[in-house]
Image 1 (cartoon, helix red, strand yellow):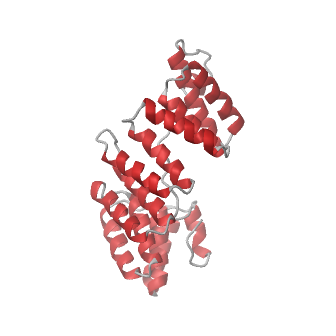
Image 2 (cartoon, rainbow, N blue to C red; image 1 turned 90 degrees about the vertical axis):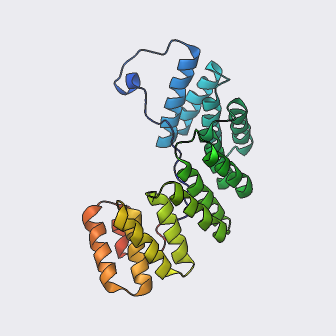
Image 3 (cartoon, rainbow, N blue to C red; image 1 turned 120 degrees about the vertical axis):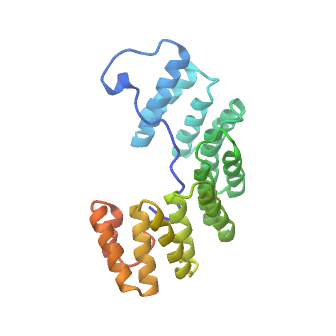
Length: 253
């Protein structure tokens, strides 16, 4: 994955227990039926099965047109289908129905940033992060940083990555984004300091270990390159990051 990724939205992608176990019991109320179909729709979206996702989500909106979750899911669907007008309309409906729901606001912000509307997207990410009901404000700040980085606003991106680490010091994604940004800016020594401090305190991830290898290569530190390469191969042998070790130094995508 590239450094320009936006952190995955915490969607309800698991099928209901009845569906997963092959059971046939169907929800009785229209609201629970809509919720059932939203979860199925999310699962099919994650699998890339857009026709079935569309079928389930259109059924869900017929069952409960007042559900913000239904409209947020439809926003994601229509974005995938390339219909930005419908996507925008459903996201705005979801926000109107649940103006204080930070997850819906975060979802909409992701959509905005992926569609070239960085200023609006960052505003919604920051609003979600400040919402006391939002359990993962670090995710919103990290996403805001990625959005700003993709828009070429590196200083503002760095500020948001640091804000994410302030509220969640063990955020591996925020640390990866910050370290990768500093390396891109030519500040390999600073990136090394930041990443080493993190790795001394928290659990490593494949992304962070590969980043540390790239930092070692940039600084000409052969011992560190071998150390972190070996650690990546041993701890995460079947990952894309481990396979990328043989490739020339580049931002893995």
